[in-house]
Length: 92
Image (cartoon, rainbow, N blue to C red; front, side, top):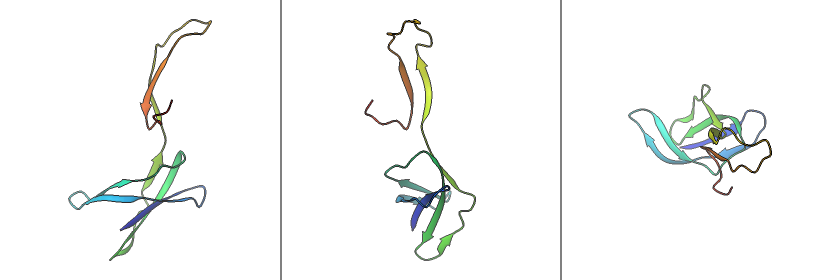
């Protein structure tokens, strides 16, 4: 199986590495090296069955902010804030 995803606005193709395929619920566990934020279409080619219909699938890449703390601070600045979320680089 050779899945990859492609950004809907351009021809930028990113390959996915299949870690495991689950027959029970027809899902794939994959890894990829990252991509620019956006919505991507998914295309899958199976070694025995050829192209798989993925017309309804979309792969969304992005980050989220879950919280900002503290919520209030001085108008003069100097307040240390903490922002938490998902899909952030470990290097601040």
